[in-house]
Length: 330
Ligand code: CP
Image (cartoon, rainbow, N blue to C red; front, top):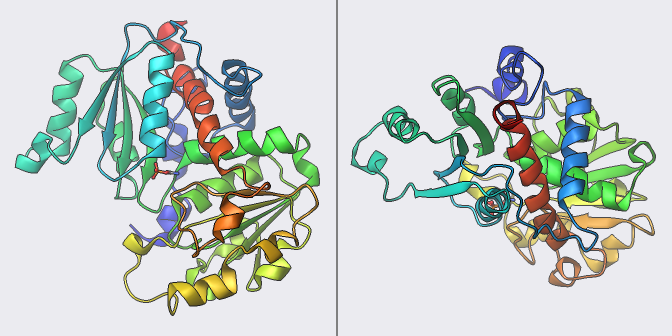
């Protein structure tokens, strides 16, 4: 799959996310989804979250439904918050350990899916190291099954983008007035792609990216962002800094001299945090590498909303699970 395909999945792939009534059926990428539907996800997430920011109340919305977490790649936050979200909605949850699943004995992915469908599973939440894996699965599932992309290769991580929009909204109700700076490995990051699509869809005033030239996609200007080589310039007056990890598992070759040099040039230090707007916040999808993308004191500091992002993941994923199942529950 070429970078061009990864950055701009075809329109039919985007359209297959909706049913004939325009309701969410699969959630694969931000691209192609109407803004009204994205707003509805945030609104529903808000309704699931109590004033204390917790989404503990169990509701019977998905009682009798079975959701399967199919994670072919490591995950802490996404897998567990999807599991909690499904359980809060009273669904039955299966966590398939793909390291011990029958695919390791030669069974194809499609045969594994057919077997799960035979058990009347209603939804697959999929994380896979291959870009396009969730789209591929959508093309092979039965009509009663929904697919949620929990991160595919370097293509998309749309639920992360939505929980980040939810978090941003909590701090900045008027998106048109803010500048958001994404710092780090834009080239290999599925979070960056989904984030940029979401920031554009929600009408963020200014979207900036900061990265070494080697970690920026060639088409970066066409993404509707302003790129900076200097972190100081990129952060100046911004309302949120979204930090990204160096995605070493997706790098083939050397993209930065070493981590300490990267930290010297691009790490978010306490001094650099002061360049943000007075009420500016620090975000990171995790996992965080302290001392590489940010100073430890920044990760734990008063501007950091990193754990708030994780907490918000439950309510936002509850909203997405409910909406994708809507055609079959109400
Ligand atoms: N943000 C994120 O996707 O984290 P995990 O890899 O732990 O799921």
